[in-house]
Image (cartoon, rainbow, N blue to C red; front, side, top):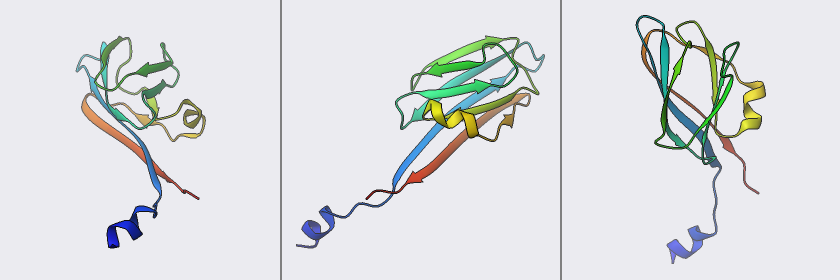
Length: 106
């Protein structure tokens, strides 16, 4: 009976993205792997670098020559979220960046 009562209750919906970056020690390249995204893909925005905007599917990894330490990066589950993100500056080595928020459901 309790299960039926709780079946109609909905809490806030979690929206998020999880991306792993590996910046090579010599600064020659960065690899990025989309771990997960509730938006269906990981949206990545390398600020002031080319390529600037990249979309990776969950499980997909790509290497980006010329993107090294010091490049600011934003990640999001939805492309529209990239315009108001606080960038994280890439550093040499491995880093896993997760961003998330809750949507209120009516």
